[in-house]
Image (cartoon, rainbow, N blue to C red):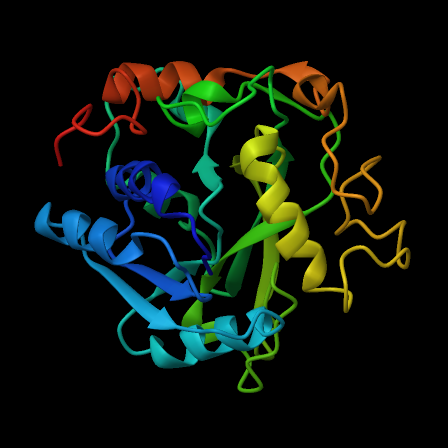
Length: 269
């Protein structure tokens, strides 16, 4: 589900296409940027990508349910991830080039497994004060040590008929179970340069409270730790949320794609 993130789309799509995504489905949450142009460029490069108008900002779960129901006959496994989230396995570290079998290997599971959880590793601004032109993978390389959330790879045939979900995972039919992957994770480029993050902060919190400035639910994990309700850039923002230097995907992406997927023309599809 996206809103005004077209500048990030190319990197996210080309990376995941290289490791095995066959079809991208974007639920457009009222974007006002050049999303249509970006999608057209990706399609012209041979990427299968669809957009679905979804203007309701407090209806993400319903959008995921709609997507799961709509594509049960055409899709086997579906990853429910955002444009700032990249599926990655440290096992790929020595791979000289990406393979479309990489994601498939993550879901090589027993027949009764209907959902694979991936821990989310939250990256901070990493010293950046503006959007890194080479892309988020190259630009953000420092993250928090702890991880609180997960995202899921879901076997659509295993999704319960209720289509119930909590954004990060679905309720499954009787006879199916969820497991946590020990080989893969999600790099979540969550706390970006303030010029980018300030828009996400206001919009994200507004999905959980009537007004993001209201001093309620202050301890919610959906609020940004230590930021408060003012939406004013802290003096030390560029250095926040940095416990561990983590450049595994940065180095791997550089080997695979050269200068970075965020730079137009840096990688042909």
